[in-house]
Image 1 (cartoon, rainbow, N blue to C red):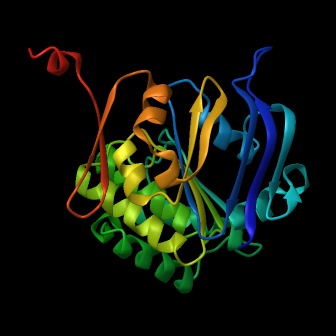
Image 2: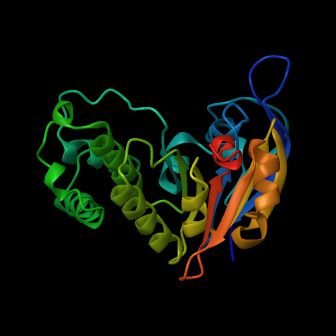
Image 3: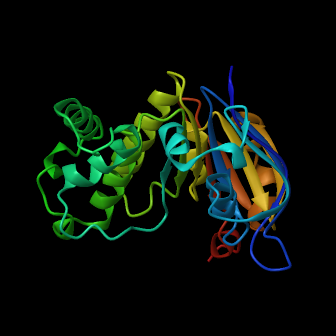
Length: 264
């Protein structure tokens, strides 16, 4: 499999004390890596460093076999798509217009979209189950609906590598599952993806590989079934955890609440 992202010895962050310290990770085509860890441990910093939006002090980042510094912005956007954690201003745009922005790296000199571009955008909206948002104004959308459009915008870029920072935030359970199902379906066809999540069970359900970050260091990484173990998650989050197996064979994780343990 092709290595799409190769991170070696990465230390990154603003100020004298780096947020990330000596992180190694390699993402190949056909892999969905989920990054888990406490708040403030460097999950978003990792993705922003790959994009070049965060400076790093040590280490190397290679994308599709080339050093990060060698990539021009347009060429990078033709190969790497990004779903940000926060919303961007989108007032005055319809859902379709917002999604079509993802076609920008592939447009010609005048930056005009074609019928083919619109067909790609509408197909992705249909795939994600939000075709009804195409003509709706972004001002009239919920946070979850706009989150789905950000994912659609990234998918219409038709990237080789997809970076997602909390893509399930603001989504109900059905849309969380639907969004990750569509990402995983594309991964199974050769896309590479890295997603920051907070839900361990979503990671267990959809990830091929998992990276555990704590205090800027890699606590563990590798195939999801090997990494997602009760003891490792307890060390990651600092709370007792319970693990159970569903009839389907899926593993389920939950924190062991103190009031439950004490019989209250």
